[in-house]
Length: 353
Image (cartoon, rainbow, N blue to C red; front, side, top):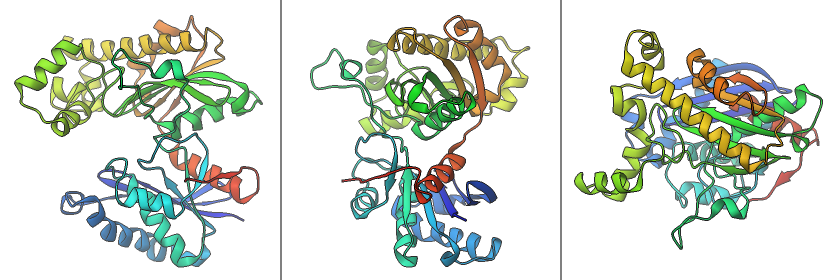
């Protein structure tokens, strides 16, 4: 039996779980107090690690010697192809110094590595957000020195693509799918035979707007807006990724409450319909990328629980390919299953260097 500890640390919470042979035994979402999440990333490490230790030692009544491997959500690293990676010294160093950016997900690998080193067990990460399999033609922009980046919900996108492929008795490397992950950010990827060859940068607002992100903005209005508000680059990044979308329009990203207003508030209805319209247009772009050779369109992420959004998107794109919905996120399952596959010798581990 392969017992896996899964760590998925986010900005305000830490998701931890135990899986036995890929089957979830117990999971818990630890909500952290503001006095912890307001600390610098590295200063958050000790209190978050203590909570994880409490989950293992007290909630699960286990010790770390009973765990065969740790599966960590991927943090901000250099661009790498998809796959399962050993959390090695180099990766730990890059995450700890935030070499490629500051994000709470970095803590998953940092804490996972430290526990793994202490108890002499392996730690892995799977399909981090920096997975980069984009084709060269998709990178080019109209400004020399600026290229489009691959930053997206790689773990969940690839997880649901694998799920679809399995459902038709094929491998992920044998299908072409378009995956729209719709959550706090929205990314739409063209998956061609196991590689995501084009996808929008979902971190800073390329593509559709979302509950929190601005989406693509007309260039002239964007730079004028930044100039008028005297934003620094850091402030602009925060605004585009945390204060756009529904937060800008309605001062909330509470989709449950806003959904109740869909039939009575014309502004809310317009916003939901516009979001679905923009997702549909982006799916159309990925259809061009795949030259119309598409087995399935997949809708996933938290927003895919919303019937209004799903129905609108489907009305725009079902002429391209069949549409299926895998609601929510499959990140914890994917981390556990892929790590179990490694331990069972069914998947190779890649080296981060």
